Amino acid sequence: MKKLFLIGLVASIAISCNRDTEPLGPGLDEIYGPFSVLEDFQVSDNAVDFKSGENLVFSVRFSKTVDWELHVIGETSGAEKVLSGKSKVVDESNATWDGTTTTPPMFKEESCWAYVTVPEEGYADTIMGLTIDSARTVSGFVVADFENGINPGWNIFAQSGANMSFNIVEADSAAQSGHYYDMGGEVSWDWLIGLIDFPASAYGVQAYPLSDNSGEVYFNTFLYVPEGISNEVILFQFSEDEDGNGSFQSASEDMYSLELRGLETGWQLISVRYSDLQALVNGQPSTPAGNEVHEPHKLYQVSLLFLANPSSGYSQTFVDYIVFTENGPLVP
Image 1: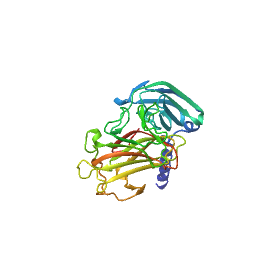
Image 2 (image 1 turned 60 degrees about the vertical axis):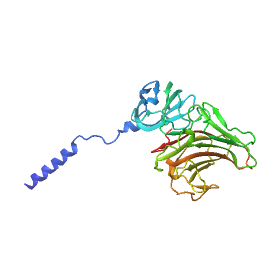
Image 3 (image 1 turned 60 degrees about the horizontal axis):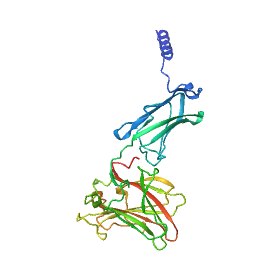
Image 4 (image 1 turned 180 degrees about the horizontal axis):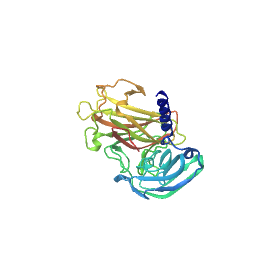
């Protein structure tokens, strides 16, 4: 009986070892085999209306798993979207484009082209003639996009310095749509080159229509520093009307600030949570003058000051698309 039991056990083990099993992970050919393109680079449509929620889906199929990159370039704006992955199939699961950008500026209503590459295999393919019929919209409260000129409710001051340029510029290279604001000049007697006040009253309200949860509110803007400029200082100030009397009292109400300097050349997106803003005095953190509570729903005015050390010479920075968003920073 003992021999029969052992024979049965050995037979059972042998049968279990010989059963069919599913392969674990990709086969060796899918990783180390020869490279070829099984299905050419394609796009789901040649035109897209992002504003209405449409997307574009790119697709291509390879013979093995590879590292690929897909780029979409705006011919007018120069905006760029980059998608990438490691797979043998590129499809809606990893190559759906919703109109967002990876590298500013934002895409506009424009012609685009796309290309896909597999650098390790020396492969590339291109699709021309894509059209954005309508750019995507962003949810948020727009303080300024400079598309319709100067809001008469804004307060603008510029020094009488040298080579002053406090004005709106129309350009395809704008961060959003077709206009931006150019702040430039040389002021040898003062740090301040110029400023713009954006009071809530300019939009027909007593306070900015924002959430009372400062952790949900984000301040966003695009800034552009031209090549060769390194002395720029951009200061945003956020003045709160805590008692709701329709004015701001600097001695008894909170003002929070965002100071930016040493920015990289070109357009870059700045996004800051409202609750992370600090009170500043001469660039150093200080105690707010009011109740010390971040209250975006009581925001009375946003101010933009452009400054530079008066001994440092000419300075210049462009600003575009100042917008508050909620529940997350701006997705351009």
